[in-house]
Length: 75
Image 1: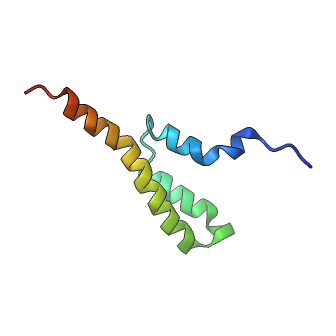
Image 2: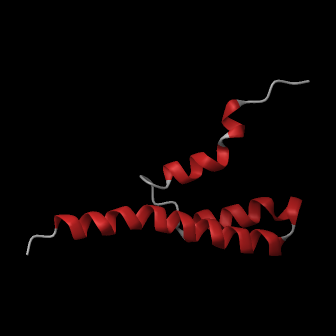
Image 3: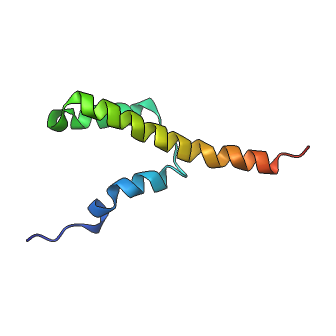
């Protein structure tokens, strides 16, 4: 049996970790995800799962920054 890459095991987790520092919720990334995998899985599944992933990544990127701005806001 071929040796699997450790990177492939944690690929989905890495997306969410990178979302904390890189704004990966832009439409270009979503479009690339859907177009790139449509051939293998079909468009409807990817559109729905892509929207869910994009929403999660958006919240991971913007959420901490929003709460940090509330904590550091000087009255």
